[in-house]
Amino acid sequence: MNFLKKKNIFGLKSPYFIAEIGVNHGCSISLAKKQILLAKKNGAHAVKFQSYKAETIASIHSPSYWNRKFEKTSNQYDLFKKYDKFNFKEYFELSKFCKKNNIDFASTPFDLDAVRFLKPLMKFFKIASADITNIPLLQEVAKTKKPVILSTGASDLKEIRRALKILKRGGSKEIIILHCILNYPTSDHNANLDMIKDLKLNFNKHIIGYSDHTLPDKEMINLTTSFLKGAYVIEKHFTHNKKIKGNDHFHSLDGKDLNNFFKKILKIKKISGLNKKKAITSERISRLNARRSIVLNLDVKKNEVITKKNIVTKRPGTGITSDNWNRILGKRFKRNLKSDHVLKWNDVKI
Image (cartoon, rainbow, N blue to C red; front, side):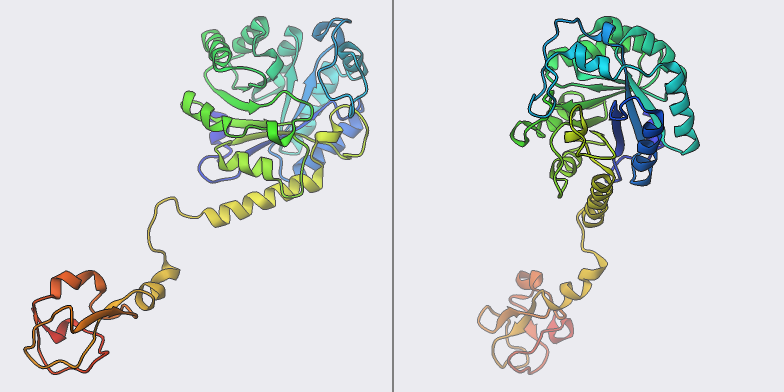
């Protein structure tokens, strides 16, 4: 997994975060650059756009599949036509701008021409959930031999396996699989984040991630939970202003949200700590004073036999520790000792 190894995302480290600007720039190159800088400032590792033409993505008879409460347009073709103004010139300019500002550039291609002109501009390709069965597009992406991030919204395991087979046969060697629910927006009860674990089980040779379409919340519960369940790549729509009506603004993160997400991740990293169970340095005093020693329950005489009647376990654990209970039963005391004495090894005839 070459390009992600360089990002150091494995183990309990920060996930590789893709801020999907999509077409939230509204076809303004200056706004797109502003959004790139905002994403970079608040911790994103990559920004992603969408490259399509209305005529090649949808027929004029394509009905909507999003929640019309948030996006009023009822026809896919009409919506896509509003935002299909960027061409190679604009994507080339944005890719240069990203390189200058040290953030990865990507754009999801929705037709074969987009695959071809995006190839020299990107480190990896992203395939949208809706195109997981689009064989010509999968084959064209595979020919680039670049890493692929594959979203799996609205698909089943059989369809995922078929897409992987096509990509691998075509030349793809590095494929990351994202759990996704293809609802805009996705309600919390439909997020199904445990599907991440199923993807990890069924595709254990692949990095698994999460593409989120839920409405952002202050605590970033959905995103942080996806990370805890094993999503090492996280993609989320991004905007400079969530109050803008229509398209993807309403379920996007803004700069404040993204910054908040990474603060939560830092807290998770902080409290996660070691991945192997052992007593840590700060517990040394607890091991001594909160654990138990063997303590005399009565006054005893020299050469008296140690029995369950004359000893008991009490704190602190600075004497003969309580896990030696069976070892000292039947032994004899070396000297006269008083009740409540914390027994030491030099008090016992071994």
